[in-house]
Length: 273
Image (cartoon, rainbow, N blue to C red; front, side, top):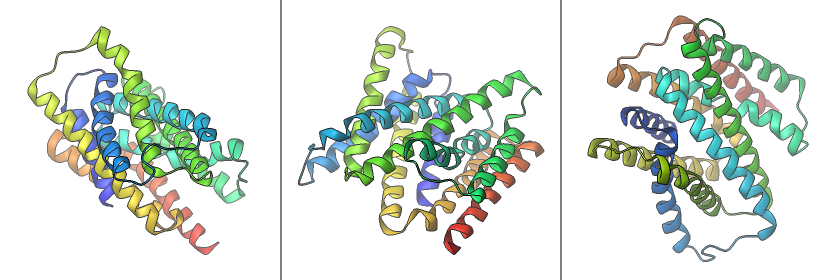
């Protein structure tokens, strides 16, 4: 839940940083995480050593993760904060689909039903055809969820291959920063001191979220704790209301209930089986 709060806080700071390109926001967010990852690796025994056979999966994880962040930041700038957070939380359902094709993990009829129901919930938030002003950013937000779900699948593959968590974070953060550098060189948007502070706070919040979620998954299996990650939607809705005066519409609330409800049912199903 600490991780969920940190990520909700990150989204708020990204929104408060104002009208800046997602590339620029992503660079500063990942630069802070990169510094934290370097410090952790320097304090470890193996430093920056990694298994070179894992390089394709590391690149894939970093690529999908970067796409996920850029799409999520675009959605944050154009949607209600809780809507953008909820669309990003489609990632566990996308991870089930990607794992089926990439890791050859079987999808049970129950999981297939859960993915379908979650998709219906997403449609309530996306509201296709009702307003192009919201539909396009919402579709991009859903694409961000797909990117995140694909990235998590690669993290699972890397973990099965014995790769260290801090190095995965380091590689992803460094890769994402490098991708953004050419854009910054040719299309940098001048920032006020306040905007820079908000982006650095977003980076600190993201680092807090990464370390919290890593600690959580180190002490309990995913099936027992993943459901608590959906508390981010509650935090996002509260922060959006208090700081941005945002109130989700009724269709979005129905979408939240469908997706969160499906995740809770999956949680109890996994506990039982």
